[in-house]
Image 1 (cartoon, rainbow, N blue to C red):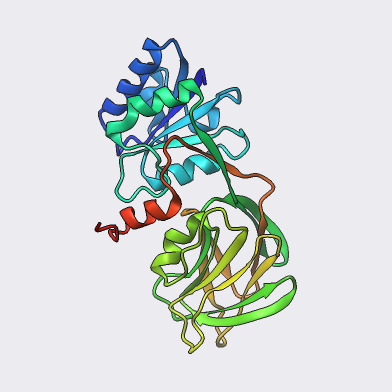
Image 2: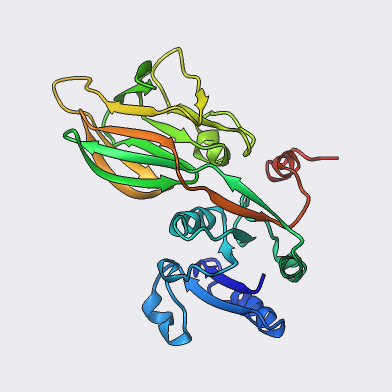
Length: 288
């Protein structure tokens, strides 16, 4: 690899110490690079920094500095660029960030020498319908989440899989997750952990008011439709988000359709740690 993009979360690398260390190492090895920041771009234009949306398509790799949240946002920003990404963990758990800070130089050498693998991760593609008209479509690496609005009561959501009713939930919300996202909000809501190479989507209710409160796992080839129902004379109100972004209001009668995305996220692996090794380490279960 010869052309790199560094995407920096300015809250995680506030003084750009890690950013400049990587820039210096790339310069020393005669590699080309650009630097993108996730906010306050006007403060950094004079340093030559750009926005993630301005990253050239000919980059060999994007190095993302931050936590899993930064990685997820980068995946969304680069969905049309087809650039593989690798993360440097400046956060806490770091399921997606491959490189720890003490391994940066060694990992960069592996990228220079071609000693890495690329994993393709499923992305969800969803369309939002209000008054039966499509008003938005977008991608998510982790999940689509519908939550009740504010402190209002429970919402009623009807789930269809391939136009067949799968279940109706009276709940605080619903999560449609990829295997990659299964260790995120889905896990916190009691959903299953799914290996990232699995070809499935996970439907998990949030605090359902029912005896049946289990997740439903369907094929990635299926089509999921979620309709916001009605509990009383007043319309139900909810908020939908894609990987924690967008946040669009929904009400009774609105719907969301979710399928396997046409595009995938490419994650670079520079070490040999398997998913379950990572899982035990990050969740504190590896005591041997």
